Image (cartoon, rainbow, N blue to C red):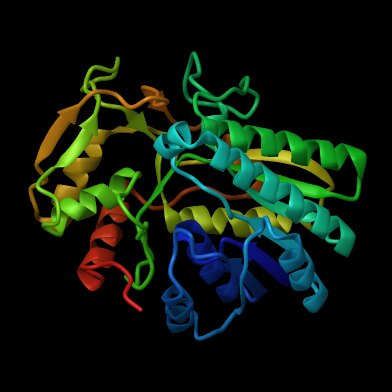
Length: 337
């Protein structure tokens, strides 16, 4: 079976490529390196002993997508490619709508033209907006509090409509919560371009001595310690969820969604304390006002993924922090070509 992974050199994409290769799949990858680096392909080969066929391409480029499907016998697509920072999406909404939604439409058009009608889509818990209660279930109302979340929600609707229009399509939308950690080898991990938006790379900057302190956005939420609460999940557990979802789209038709999380929340301060334990380093903190688009509490009810996909998270918050710190130790300046 040959699987096309869009955005396959990114943080979650690269870990999923590793799991695919180790599960015996043939893998084709494309990426435009907007938020990743070419050396990730070499790291994947070091971990697995296997190579992937790679295209440097952008999903908004219909001719590039057409070429990939023409040159390969693709059976299914795992779709990660897209801009992904909540804060940046508030500042640059048009870029997010154009790239994430427009690019996915181009991708789906070329999939349909090539007769490829199986997809696992990288969605997000942001599609639940600011829910009245937690844990979040798949049957909760959907909404969005920022343009990034809106793009995920619109793409889910597009994919659901595609499945209605053509019953041969099979799509699983995985609603991630908060992926952190790194591969246990320390060879691949989270190394965003520019100033990090996600919390773990910011903690890593402090641990590496590049920043003086970690900025906490808001300590006045209605939570036990005032900081935001999130469902953190190890990126390897998340990658394995894609293997389970891929098996699902080979066996059923139509559109489905699944929460992918651990099923409990940790506050920002709890995460920082866990990282301090794993690294043996004190992480200084600075409190700043809340960021636009953030919510107080977000964690999953992952029951459906366990019952339908046979998947559940296995690794703990301490595992996530240990592996993230191991990646930092082996890559103190991030990926270097």
